[in-house]
Length: 254
Image: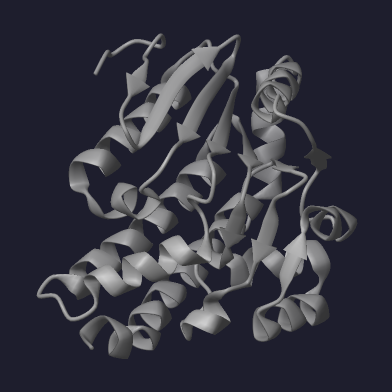
């Protein structure tokens, strides 16, 4: 991979390029392979590190395609590793990748934004909430589907969700397994904007570029203040990791 700020990366799983101050990371498919395949994971975080080190990049926009964050994809992953010799290792590796991403975002100097389509299941709702801005297509849904999968909620959602909607509503969402429409998510304050049309991706890139025009030093300082409780977040993620492994042990080993 190139070692300068003009890095571009293309694969069947994700693409990355820089567009006028914005690092655009487009996740196309195989999101769980990104978490469990060491080569893919290394390539993903190499792009994120390049964005962090580049003087050109002030924001990172993560775009999901189709249903790559869906409950069906999560179920497919769990089924694929269940009963295999390395199932527990792959499950742990996937959870570790999500936690590593969350901590990277919190420590970054850059703004992070997400542009979400299709169904977004519990752990990826959580990882989107750590980002500064969230945009969704009008047909997107937020599905708290961990309940249907009979597994604990991952992706840091137990920490971040109450910060957005309060403890009572967070408990309701996490216990009920409810699915929210894009409008319902917007009304709750979980997303910043809902866009329609085939130009969804272009709209989100344009919005990210406008936000990236803000003074980087001020943004970085503000982000440091917003996440001044990073020690608590790290402690939460460590506990979540243990609970996820315990709560999913019977599924993975079956």
